[in-house]
Image 1 (cartoon, rainbow, N blue to C red):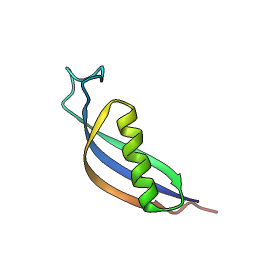
Image 2: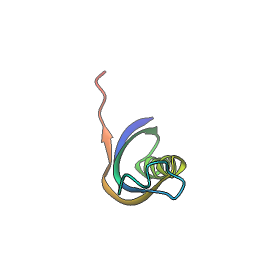
Image 3: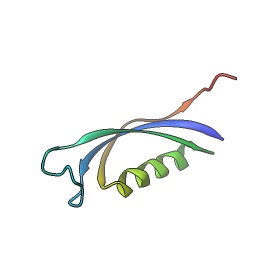
Image 4: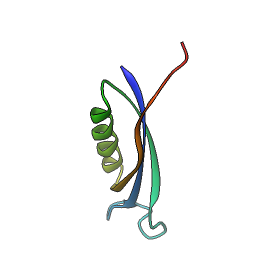
Length: 68
């Protein structure tokens, strides 16, 4: 498996407790999976499951090389 970093620009969903105080946020998501495509899908799902609406992928997926 590989590790990927994805940064996603988000806005709070209507159920998000921060919707009145924040216009948006950048979510940095680290994903361990087999491909960049899988990492992106998992990151988008993770952000959505935590009451944030993905707006734009700002960076990534970037494969991260881990030291041996």
